[in-house]
Length: 134
Image 1: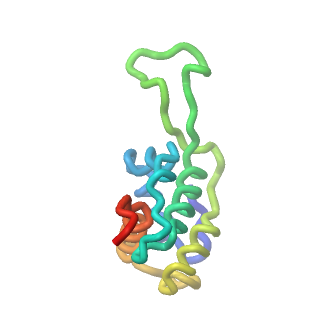
Image 2 (image 1 turned 180 degrees about the vertical axis):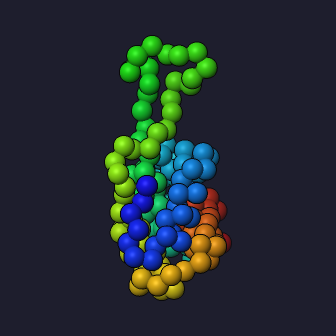
């Protein structure tokens, strides 16, 4: 889980939802996003939002191969993502970066989760846009 740093429940719930979206989680935990970072997109954040999002999602999930833990059970894939068994992660670096990229999210005021998701998904789209020149 994510530690609530004051009024960050809007951010924590949004991150939890996104990190439980398999295609997005796998994209970041497999490091596939590294091939797509666009640092020259004038509409993006030079890849900073993508990087800080990847670090946070990777800290929430741990990659392991269950075949090393014993015989493979029927119906179970050879690789799974499981949450780290830590009590919680403090998303301070993510929150600080978010506040620098969008001043609306700086400070400790309560915000709307939809506004954060709109900014985050739009920013990730631009930071990971494969079109290098516009």
